[in-house]
Length: 545
Ligand code: OOB
Image (cartoon, rainbow, N blue to C red; front, side):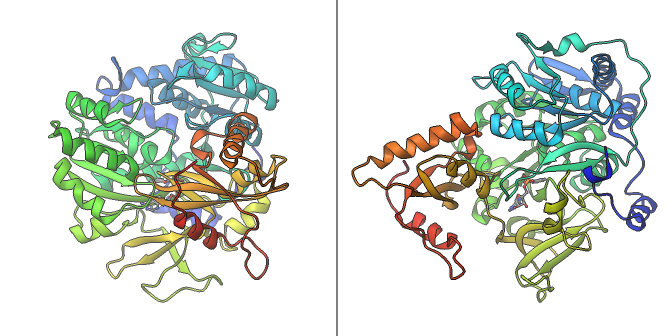
């Protein structure tokens, strides 16, 4: 790692965060060791019919770390991990943390475009996949990735490995390894992004563990907590807010769910006496409908966390009556800052706000377009810095100059207001992004892929409101050679296939709708008038292509 990889906190602030006990000098590898000593035989993980104790997990991490070293992987190198919600996600991550290998937290839905970019940006040495998941063969993807990511030396497969290395083959006798330093990068999270290329988010052991410990306290996770991991575990919300790591910190039990459909989830809740679960609003809607219809026994549930996208207050109000448990709103970001409504807050706060920051040292500014503080209660851009918010993206010196203020505040791209009771409300977004059921799509990235098709002269991706997903994407296209007699629905399909097959884009990022325009509306300075396009998309009543 070099200085350019990672922007450290200024010494003065780092000293403060240590002095106040936020950063404790513990690595995530040492964290698991301590938990294994404390909770040894208790069940840490339930994965289908397999159960892993804290000790099992600790030993597996040691053996795998030794195996990684034997296979030539070195501290400071990067490994892209793309696993569904299975126990091996944790053994792989903790083995990395033990030896200072840095996992890049890819999601199961990512495909050639995304994984290729992560491998290249991180100069990844290894890539970990399942053999198959959800009807998709990741070994086929790995073959494509090897062709575009020259730094990759190893593909590691959980399951049937074909020509690659089976994860089981990396099992080795534990050996003493040099421990990383808590101020080092522990993992690379993914940014939702608003630019053409996704950015990687370096989180240190110190800052990540602080956010986990403090979240545990706020959310009251205890040794009795049984946490259902329904969202993809690599994501910051189910990983650390307080999520699976918070459950481990508490001595509780994680129940891994491979797919988040409500039937399977409710069965797991009943079978394992699940007490805590985190959802995005679109999943919450599906679960609410299912539970209202079928009335499964959910008496063990104590807290349902919802975050990742805007939650309508009418939906929020259904949670407690339908699930018989408390609701907590979570407004967070992989870059750091996480806000929670508190368990003791009155209904008006829990139903209508997105809570307040974790830390007394989280600094929040709400500013206008010229970075001046807005009047109290007014809506503005949210800027933040603090003990677990990054000061810069991974190897992105030029971009960091615009993504952060000169004094180190992260420009979240969110529009918020602060209520008189101190809680934040998310009012909208200034970043050019679509939030599709909690999954973020950078408009510029998809526009770039659309522009790579020879028929496309201009492309603009906008968000359209959607009752289920919150937002869906609609791409507007200006053709290079308009042809009056052409079947446009056929052409829309061609463009979608171009994105999927030629560009290798994840499914959720393929536009839900494609519309053709002769000329884009422009703003006075000649930029595409996206608000007008959005209006147009909403007005057009024709069914999605
Ligand atoms: C979480 O993290 P990311 O990195 O996938 O996305 C962050 C962005 C925020 O900047 C905001 O635009 C949006 O997602 N968002 C919300 C929200 N929570 C996140 N917008 C409205 N209301 C909310 N409650 O999404 C994330 C990370 C940790 C915990 C929870 C969510």
